[in-house]
Image (cartoon, rainbow, N blue to C red; front, side, top):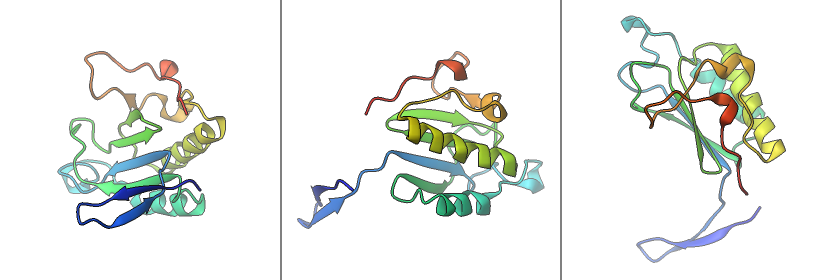
Length: 143
């Protein structure tokens, strides 16, 4: 595993292992997963279990986070893979979580961004532009 050196502000040199991606799951915010407010449950335990089972720790980091800023959609997930952002909303059942991890693994194997699987296509959105995201036209990863 390739590492590089980073000098912290205290002068200590740290060996950093770069990752291919980061999966952020909104689970600590104002709406996502709050069933008492009418939102669907988030299977957060499954996210962690699949991340561990698939041994992605050194490849794609997993963070359970607070608000990602798309509250109207709820149960939002942000996947950053080699600098490319992919947003998903309404990820609330086990089949979707498993499909998401299958999707991540397939992109890592292909070394390319692929169209999302059928189960997730309607959950893709673009958080930073005024137009709808077309899941069939995601940019290609460059490594």
